[in-house]
Length: 195
Image 1 (cartoon, rainbow, N blue to C red):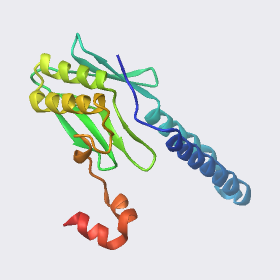
Image 2 (cartoon, one colour):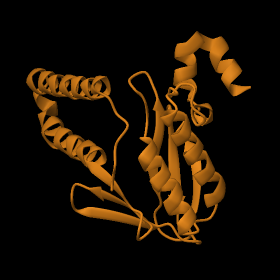
Image 3 (spheres, helix red, strand yellow):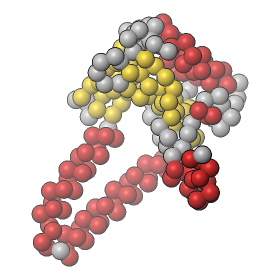
Image 4 (cartoon, rainbow, N blue to C red):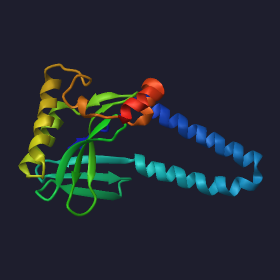
């Protein structure tokens, strides 16, 4: 079962506009500074490839096998089994998104977006998927599964009852970094955020 990315059209527009600005800047540097053309020709493609690899991925849940799978560029696969040796927790990325973190005792872990509240998006995973995630971590006995499953089910119930993402049980677990705090109120907001 695919796990949707919690993005918006506005967010993608910002990413595309930024990429176009970088290309225009590279063209200007390449035309006006011939001595730097070699850097423009070699560095820019590598940067775009790097960010393309970061952005082109899909995440899947196999509830029967009890696995989370992330596939990047249809080639690189990371699989995390939701077993007793894997710890699960709900963590904030400090940028407006609450993630389900699945960390095995060895190897790479995965982060799955659960709720996002940013300048561009205010979304939660759908109730059916929240329940599937809750069932999977609980049935396969992942470490820390009970409180995580309870929180995911509570979020699903809230959404099914017509509640909003802003007033949802998991919205309060989202924290933001200093940049968001600064946007909210300048130096005073940063000082309050640090305190």
